[in-house]
Image (cartoon, rainbow, N blue to C red; front, side):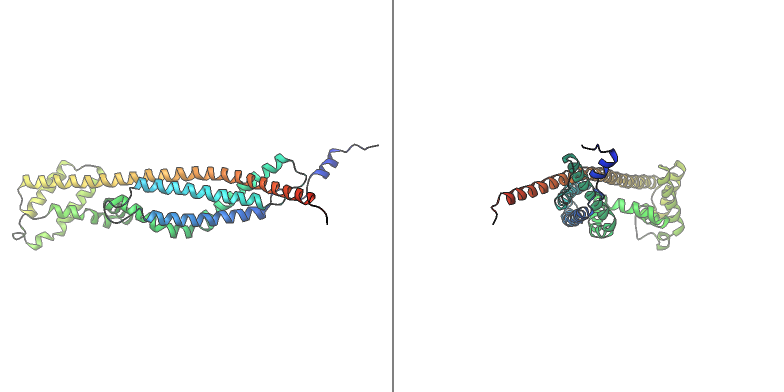
Length: 309
């Protein structure tokens, strides 16, 4: 007579004491994916440097460079995730007394875990090395894309008032250029007090977005006294210089906005590539595990069919 098994007895028979996670294949797949990512990123860095040039008109635009970099990041993520997930599935051992659906789930989870570990390795442990390898290309691209105006604006923002003075120095010099250099004393040309007043007026106008009528009139008088121009000509020069300052500001803002949009595009495409990379690694893990089991089953059948000696 058969004795009915209790749920506790069934559990003790069907449950294994070992974990369902095989860390060996996961680590191996993660290392393979990380190494492939580094190699492909270095290749992408070399290709990116060919797109930038210090010569005007010879470089790709910031948008083109960013989209190309993001597309290459997608390729890197997909290839490395696929290889790492597939190796994880092929290298695991056979799960005995496990349902087919559970095997599929475990292979999928192992592929995902290999992708997650590889992503952490690349982003964390290898982050500094990748930054040093890719930094020169990114810096060159941003410098070429932004131009001189952005460089001056960035310097002014990072180094304080002295850099701001250097940025506005050209426009101040333009204000006080004499009409006839032979008739203006050198001492007058180097009047630091007058130059300082004009610089501070331009800085205030840049902060406020406009120059007040009183400041514009005072600037015109300073220019007239320093250059020998008539008051009307001095006022016209002031208007021209202020227009040039506004044009430089607008150029810097446009370049900064282009860089902002390019960075946003790169970040969004990078996040999308990571999500799809996780999916590819999971599918590749399931595919690798399935092929591993099929190859083992085929080998067992061939051994059983072979004549005994």
